[in-house]
Image (cartoon, rainbow, N blue to C red; front, side):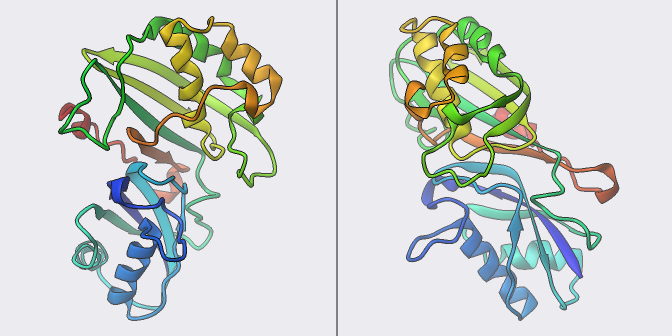
Length: 261
């Protein structure tokens, strides 16, 4: 039997999603909890391997098991063995051809900037703080150069293992609400550190240190050394993973969380 789970987590205390020796990761605690419920080894496959200190509202994983449990048990039983910052929010039986990674047709992230002279206390680890005033209109104008299918070699981490740097960005929108700047981006897939490198490139444009056209020049260069510094992981959220309708995967995207900030 193949199961899919939706998982929400606060990445602040984890060294990312993927298992690593001698480090706390989200994959490690999820698999350990599932094994307590299934009473057998469990290996999960994820839609997206988030970095250290990156959060998720709607991570999706799948695994196979011989164990029969109710959906209630897969959700609430697993949660009883998870640390406070990680929760399973739904469970589904899925067809054998479902793959959390390869069946996904799009992924959406949100990056939240707190733009104020004073670093926030209560939002520490949940937003990125930049104290210089940012021109959101210029940042939005620059971001339009990245829409569509491009080679994003300039935006990938040096350690990125993807065979191709070509990705298609289907939406990239910046909005501002008082002291908060929201950067929402959707694509068929992302390269390692791609969103953080995009944000790091938009910041100098927002400050007025670089022209809007710099965003296009960096894209055309296909060279990571030409782009801005990698932005902090704090404030980056995996917001939604979309699959073909036939899999009946819940859409995620818990808007109510954003009302809190």
